[in-house]
Image 1 (tube, rainbow, N blue to C red):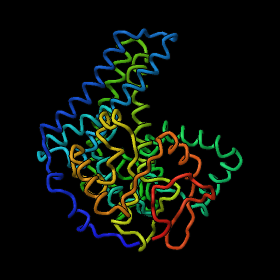
Image 2: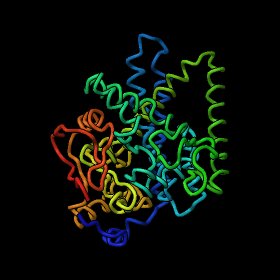
Image 3: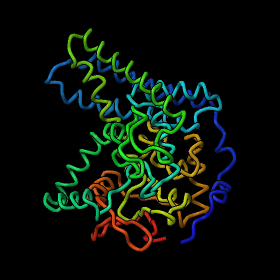
Length: 374
C-alpha cells in the first residue's frame, strides 16, 4: 500500500487548524483545573477520612483523576507547542500543570517528541515499543501467558501497565526504543550516548530544571502530610486521583498505537507517514472527549501535526478522513473491549515479510483497517 508524503497530508488540513488562540487555551486549562480542584475541595469537606467511606473515596479518586487527565492533556499541548504563540506562557502553564502531576515537563517534552518522530518504529520508537517474540524477554512473556492462561494474563498484564507503567517508563525507559537503552527522565545521563541519546546537548539542563519542580512539589506533599499528622489525607486526596490519571495516560497511549492488526516497522521499511498512520482513533464518548480535550478520538490528526490545538483537531480529523480514507484508522470497538483484546493478544511481535506483527492466531472480532503488510 502506497502512503502519501508528509506534504500531501498536511496540505489537506485547513489553514485555520494551525492557528493557536492563547485565551482559548487558557480557558480550557482553567476549566480542567477548576473541575479537578473543585472535586478535591468537595471531598475534603464532605467525605469523612474513615474506612467505612472507602467506596466514596474510590469514586472520588476516579472522578478527580479523570478530571486531572484534562490538565495532563493541556500540559501535553504546551509541550508540543500547540497551546500558544507565546512560548513563555506556554512553558509556564505546561511546567506547572505537569509538575503538579509529578511529570518532569521538559524531560517528557523531549521523549514525547521522539515518540512522534518515530511512531511504530521497532528500534527507534519511544513508548509502547513491543518486544520481539524471538528474544528472551518476548519468549518469557509468551510462556508466562501460556502458563497463566490468556484471560488471567490479560488481567495481570493490564492492571500492571495501568498502575505501574507510567512511573516505570519515567524511571527506566521501559517500552522505549531499544537503541536508547535504560533511560531515566530524571537523570539525563542514563541510557545511550551519541546520536541515540534521549537527552542530547542542551536537553540535559532542561531535565535538571524539570527535577527541581518535581522535588519541590514532592517536598510540599511531605509537608502536607506532616502538618496533617498523617499520610492518609495526602493519599486519599492526591494519591488516588494521581493513580487514576496515570492509568488514563497509559491506556490512551497504548490504545492509540496498539491493536492486533496494527503493525510496526523496522529499518528502511519505516517512514514517517507509514508510522504515523498506524495511529488509531477510538470512540471515548462526549463526556470523556470534553474532559480530555478529544485526545483519544482525534489522535491521528494530532500525530500528523502535533501543533494543531485540540479545539481544531476535529476539523483536521474530518479533512484527513475524507482525503485518505484508506489510511485513516478508526476502531469503533468500545474502549473496555478494545483494552481487553489488546491485553490478551498484544504481547510480543514476530517478523512477517517486511513488517512486525503481533504473534496471535486468534480472530480479533473486528478490524481498524490497518494494512497487514506494506
